[in-house]
Image (cartoon, rainbow over all chains, first blue to last red; front, side, top):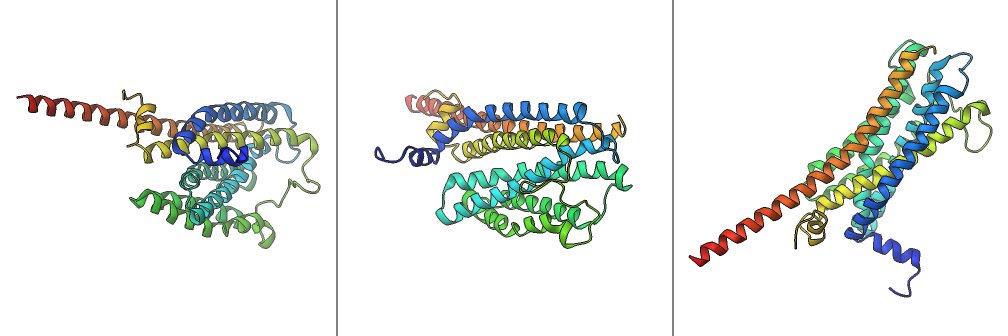
Length: 252
Length: 56
């Protein structure tokens, strides 16, 4: 262990439940705090600095929470499937915990995506909801998240539950390209791709900064939430161990 | 601001969901640690009463 690369050694240490608990307890508040501060800057720019859209008026300001939430809803699913695959192949307990912690966070961002899209749709499309390919596939993603959460809760053995739910997460990854390309493959009411990481965006550069702040902020927030939720699950799984009793302040 | 009600509602939903996301794991951690403390107290009380029974 002493000759091991420091990064590899750190990963090994992180797999230890007490070490992870200390790590998560230390860094989750920082990630939450930085995420909140970054999103506060983004929201201020989005609501008070960037000019109104010439067609949509001020309703376009909803985009600054809708788009980052939509990206996070897909990113969390991909991360959940990745952790799930690692957990299935290498049987790493921490990866099971992290995979399952991704589900409620991703579901929360999916709810935000659907709700804010619906609120934007009412004045712009004249309806709260439409069975459009993008909207419908995003709704299916929410049901998949509920499926993962439900399956994890339904099986008593925590490790077997995590493995079963991980398998569902891996299968569910098929939804991600469907959501991504739904506006290309089908005749969709939802607008096409506006912002491109590679290539030119059709959004004016003056409108981009708040979006970048919000994208970074939601990512930092998700890291905080992932650590906090994984810590809670880790503590619950290890509740009978001495280190948890010490963490709870039980005199030894 | 045009569409102020829609914009406010959207940002309120965003804030409410993130607030839940922040609070939910904290409540769960507090519940787990409380359960551990209660279990430890019960074990201690049981051990003490067993010891007293043996003394009689």
